[in-house]
Image (cartoon, rainbow, N blue to C red; front, side, top):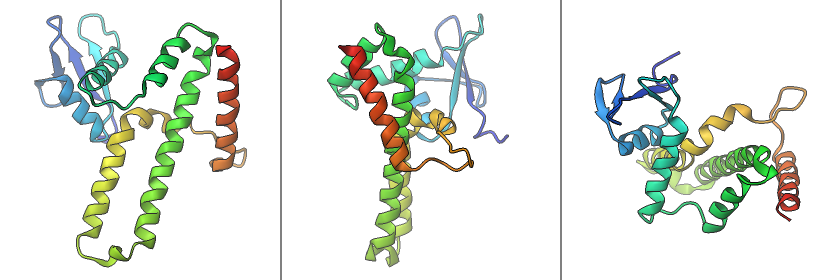
Length: 183
């Protein structure tokens, strides 16, 4: 497994400082967000107890961005997430979110592919670099949120990925279940 495939191990010291074990230096939350935007998985552990603190720190990164006005999550979604922690929906919500982000990534990938296939500018010098930047941007926008779920995509019995229609159907079923649970 190459270094970029292994999660970057970050250790939290008792002083709450975060230590990058690969580069042997201290990092900030913004540094960690940068690693994730760059496509790198991270794992943050407490040095003394060995507890995995990754989820806690990722939520803190999201909260800091939201508080700075870099809102990605609509207020209604945040309210629904809070409600899901107090209802029976907690078992369905992670799967629902995973499928939603997979669909978003798939749609964005297809959009980029279609742009290059139909665009007469594709023959212009520098177009490939611009397309690579667009792909990096799309990856940064969704990679941290959806990257972990890519391996859990549903598959048919014959081993191929399910069609978009199947996923949409499952998403509609999950939405119906969530609606029933919130009533």
